[in-house]
Length: 224
Image (cartoon, rainbow, N blue to C red; front, side):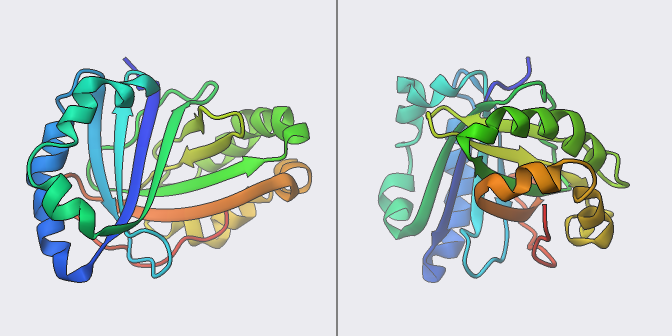
């Protein structure tokens, strides 16, 4: 079954608690949440950004409502996480997303680089935004050498923000900052008819190391 929901948790942690943070996250917190009914997969990522949260956890779900279940909430309070770790975290951002339109691929497994594009769109351009994203923009980008798949999600709120994941194989980690990527992003109607109407765009390029390996990135992301 393809995941129908995605729960993204982004945060920083005090540097003098970072080692314990990663130990507890890897050996207690994620292993407690991963077996909860409705959780298909849990993955952790890291980036060395000086301004954006350095750590991200992605929980692929049967449905967005899984995170509201008693089992998920109980699992999140087990172990050392609520007392020894959570008080030392900061810059926390939570995103509750559901699968958007026709993109049903899964996020990649280990040894991948993820390029997250998160944005909102002005309401009068939303229909065109979704049409061009699905039928023109992503099909062009996914054909680039090294691209693996793309998954689109959207928030459940009325004011929708789309999060698009276009993971690349690690053999081409610089693809999202390359001239080829930027030139391809400018092809078609996306640049003149949609991009000027996007809001709160955030770009994140993150190494996907699996649960116990958090390799830092080499460089920051480029344009989307």
